[in-house]
Length: 140
Ligand SMILES: [Zn+2]
Ligand SMILES: [Zn+2]
Image (tube, rainbow, N blue to C red; front, side, top):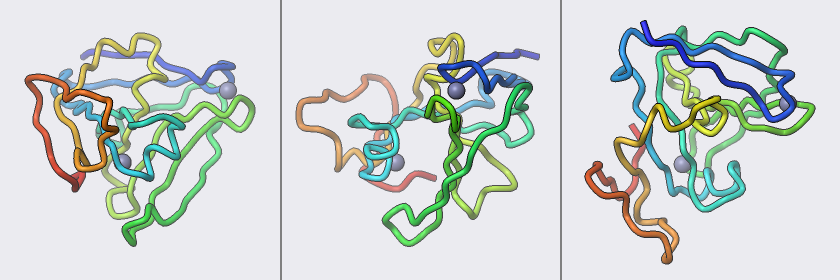
């Protein structure tokens, strides 16, 4: 069973991610405006994982919940001390999934992207990622 470790920048929050197979993680880019703001850059990069695959082993995340701009509530968890973003999830899937911020993994390259969402909002200077799926908007 593959296991991955991760943390925030200051390492007060540390976690383990356990997957039955790497295919259980779906990493994707999201170009929506809510992700631009939350990540502080031009896209978000998260891995969709089963909720129970993520176990916080040190510290505790702080949660911020807000309307994501399309009428649904999104929850975002981060380190209160250093501000690193750890994960997010829509209210409708909060009991099933987490969208883990891929950059918080100790080895982010282990879970490369499988697709891109909200491509209509892609920054003009940013090329498409080749050989992955591309959706104009919705993130399912
Ligand atoms: Zn921290
Ligand atoms: Zn987004």
